[in-house]
Length: 195
Image 1 (cartoon, one colour):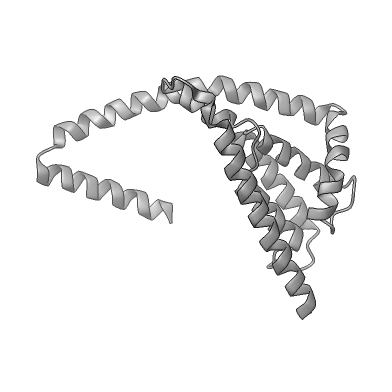
Image 2 (tube, rainbow, N blue to C red; image 1 turned 180 degrees about the horizontal axis):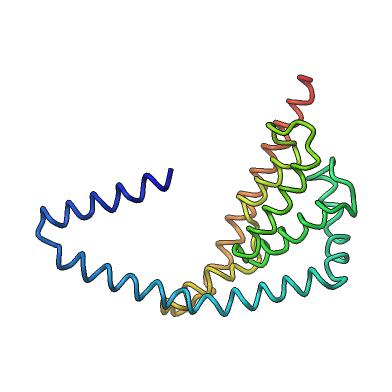
């Protein structure tokens, strides 16, 4: 869908710039945007490398076992079908930890890996399991204690107080998580009573 939407927006922008006589402004904004994108990418690279390195250390050390054990009561409630100590349990833990640290770039491949593992164990391949649906909801709500990527972006764009968004992020992600989990549990319960 985005492959269709973005070219349409670009074509409309160029046509509008031609009609309104703003081709010079369009050209200069294209080159300015390219420079800004490169600066932003370079400034985010350090943050991404740092946190991906930390996640790799967590993954390779026994720390992941301790964190997974700490999260186990929550996991039993959210994912009752997933066994404690299983491969998908570990992968879900890594994804949730990455999300909590605000590492969307690290969380995405970990989340895809967890979904792949859950799909391998899914008996009905064309339908999501309850655990898969709950996992998608958690990733969409994306509870974050440290919104690292957003703070890095705000810092690179010259924000006077890049960390001022932490409390609003906590409030919004906690509310989104509670709403998503509550609705998912209601729908899961309804689907079980129908079957």
